Image (cartoon, rainbow, N blue to C red):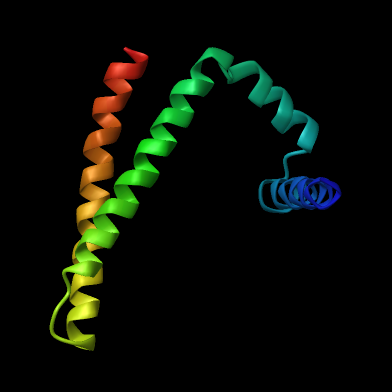
Length: 103
């Protein structure tokens, strides 16, 4: 528990630093914007989409990887195919899930 609190604090510090340096946005303005625009009832649907995307990526990548034959040259080809298939599939499923979950 103690280590996770330290990690959380470090992550928040890193996010604040990134926001402040790259975009010149004070953290208070960022969090006020998040509070203003975030619809809390959408959080479960967002988590469902993230879970579905993670499963799709894992299944597609493992499927392509496990069926690779022909040595190192084919690993690169298979990786490219898996990435392309993942991008297309996730994009299509994103449209579908957005329509189903958010109307």
